[in-house]
Image (cartoon, rainbow, N blue to C red; front, side):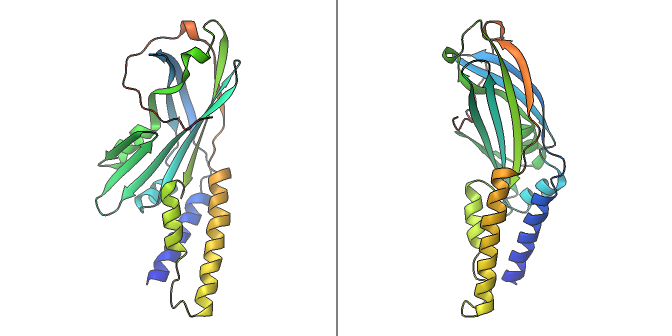
Length: 221
C-alpha cells in the first residue's frame, strides 16, 4: 500500500508540473517610498490553476518566485520567494516569505496573500538617484514540489517501496530517485515562469510616500 501511495503522489506531481499551460501573470506594479526603502505594490493572476491548487491541498509544497529587475540605473535583480504548505492533519495553510511566517485557515485567505503584495521592499532609496528615471521589470513563477520541504518529500518518495532485498524494488527506487532529481529539479529551475512585464518610467522624487508595516521577502540579487 505504501508503494502504491507513493506512485500516486508521483503521478500527481507529474500532472501538476506538466499541466501548467497558461503561466502566471503580473497585472500591476506601483512603486512608492517608505522610510529609506523603495517599495512596491504588486498584483498577479493565475498563480493557482487547478493542478497547483490540488498539489498544495495534497500536502506537497509549492513555491512562488517573483523576480524584480531595476533598469536604467545600476541594474540589479531581486528574488522574492514565497514558500507555501498545507498541513493535511490540521487543515491549515502556511506561507513563508523572508522573515514573514503566516498561517491561514482556508485556501482563499492564502490565495489573497499571494495574489497581492503590499509595500514589498525592493532596494534602499540611497541606491537610486532622485531625478533619474528607471523601469521595473517583473516576472513571476509558480513551481510545485519546490522549496525546503521538497527535499523531505523527495526522500520519502525515494524510499524502498517493498523488501529492500528485492532487486526489482531496489531498481524501482533508483529509477524513482533519478526521476525526482532530473525532472522535478529541472522543473524547479526552468518551468513555471510567466511572461515578463516592464513598468515605468519612474522617478524617485515623484513617487508617493507610504506608511505601512513592511514585509521582508528579499533573497538578494
